[in-house]
Amino acid sequence: MAASEATPFAKTGGLADVLGALPRALKARGEEVALVLPRYGHIKLDGARRAFNDLRIWFGPASWRADLYCVDQDGVPVYLVDCPALFDRETLYGAGGADYPDNHIRFAVFSRAVLAVMRWLFRPDIVHCHDWQAALVPILMRHPFAGDPTFYGIRTLLTIHNLGYQGLFPRGILPEIGLDEALYKAGVVEYWGQVNLLKGGILTAGHLSTVSRTYAREIQTPEYGLGLDGVLGSRAGELTGILNGVDYSQWSPETDPHIAARYSARDLSGKLECKRDLLGEFGLPADNLDRPVAGIVSRFTSQKGFDLIDEAAGEIAREDLTLVALGTGDQAYEQLFRDLAAAHPGRIAVRIAYDEGLAHKIEAGSDMFLMPSRYEPCGLNQIYSLRYGAVPIVRATGGLDDTIEESTGFKFQEYSPEALLSAVRRALEAWKNQKTWREIMLAGMQKDFSWEASAAEYSALYRGMLEGRP
Ligand code: ADP
Ligand code: GLC
Image (cartoon, rainbow, N blue to C red):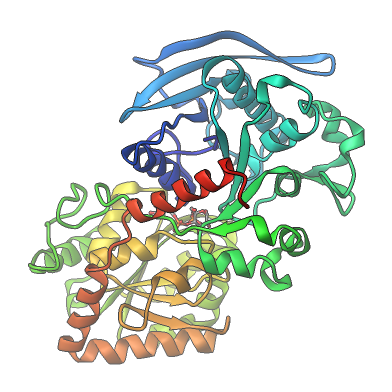
């Protein structure tokens, strides 16, 4: 597998959760899996084995050098591509709200290093690539390296975790990443006068998947396809939707070390302690213990539906509800939450941060969890919320629609503040009858989204690819 994030090495979102858990779940089924990641500066190499010295990657006259290291993560070899000039930076993808200007070079070097791993270290049956950062792998194998017998017979799978990130660059970058101008055509990477690496991956990978069945369907429509619906539709026969799983060793209120008290579906008593602790963390008065607390943990991007919260905030604030939010991202949304907190002290609070421990505390201390996404390929937080008894209020799209049922949460269809409000009000109505509420919570807590089922679907997909079935 090749990806730009995986827990515990590097994480900005759910991609990392998936890559941290899926290889292990596949291994438990008897598959042999290795993972290739960039070695970002903060990743320690203590205990790592040097697997390849001084790898040279040539893009025309320019060259980059990298070393490959290998560490063992629960029995899965993880190859780290160490090229400090490109990856030893503050953050993964950019700084100050802008992407790094050389991201195309960074992930082209990474993708070429993935080919080097397959050439020198681990010849797989299948190379499973994730998102645009690894989309060059199938492009390289199909085009510049098509005649290289090293890669003959290796199948390629590209998983799309989020169509909102396509790896779009100006045409002029092609020589900087060692791609021939001849590939600048609609059948490969050309896209409305630009280079689109995800598109190139979609057109060259042997098979495609995405992270829920509904999203697999949605992305073939203009509303959700973000300009790639036609390309995806042309490959509908090779596009599979497989829902992500949850790593319950990390996300269970029975064992979670981050939260104030442990609890479970059998004994809910610790949850009140977690709620008190959460209110304290956010400096909210204890009288909020009696009203429902709704939590948000999210990257602050337009994908997540914050403009609905913006428009509905006045009405929401009039309801008997407390809101706590944790996130970072677009400055406009950070400001939105700061303004809301300032306007409703004691009732709305925000922490602008990336804070793993606090994310767990919000799941445990909240009664409800708000995720009104505009689109959501899978979404993990709503599934974590189910297990923590934080009843999800979600927009019925992508993985949110596939994971939340009428018996376990509150869904709304239309992307409008009115629809969001009516779902919030339905939840508040249900809250008034604590017996009903408990039933909804327990129904969610008993759902099982562990990785075994999803890993079995990936295994079946891999087998099908090897047997040449679509
Ligand atoms: P996405 O991948 O689109 O961000 P997911 O719901 O799939 O959405 O996954 C988000 C993951 O990132 C979850 O594990 C969530 O807890 C974590 N996360 C997001 N924002 C933060 C934050 N500010 N602090 C801590 N964890 C966060
Ligand atoms: C993306 C999506 C999210 C999904 C995650 C892992 O970041 O936005 O919905 O859960 O990838 O697949």
